[in-house]
Length: 282
Image 1 (spheres, rainbow, N blue to C red):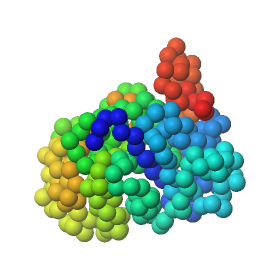
Image 2: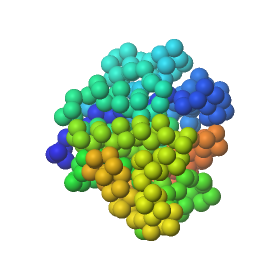
Image 3: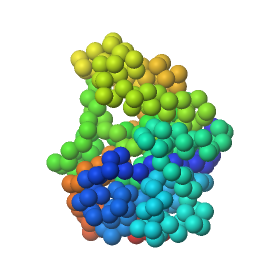
Image 4: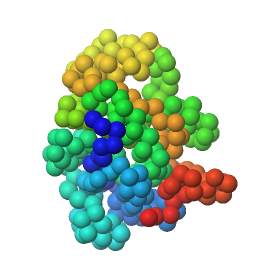
């Protein structure tokens, strides 16, 4: 694909449970509406995507239509056609696949989530530029754990520990062609087996791959190659240098964390250089 190609973005915005702890903590009808420094998370994400200049269309999977009125700004964007809303399904992978079915196979796709409250145009640009240059069908965004630890000491993140480094996910995925979309089918299989971890190991990764991981023999490329072989998708990682990319609002205590990061950025001499990281909406 050409580096200048624009992407269609799919944003997953539904709660995974009926009693999401972030939504309960914030007193909102769904997690995506949680205000971060006064601005709903979903609006922050939509603004970052728009300001990147690389997104030509946004498809929003969830939240349920019955709660849209609780976020008037989102309701206005859906009503104007700026955002295309579709109902979410019963899992993230099925919602993602539903979004992909609405997109022409020739269009490259960015997949992200509504709880990515620290997403900036620069993060989106970096990820999509590097993805477009990669010789692959799909990419996944990762941040080195040390990058996050150095920027935000004390924060707790889920860490993938491999021989060549420790990495954190950042809810950024690209599907660069029709083959890349098969990664969602692989993801759905993993979701279906999540309550049976050893079946997941055997059927998805295979016993050798998991042994290499447990012994920390596997490198990032080896792990991705194992997944690529199983999924039939040539996938690559994009290592993002922005620590903010690895911090989402997954737990109630993350609300205070991201707000403290934004307030600290607002007091920095570099205020404004990261677009929506200083967080006025467009």
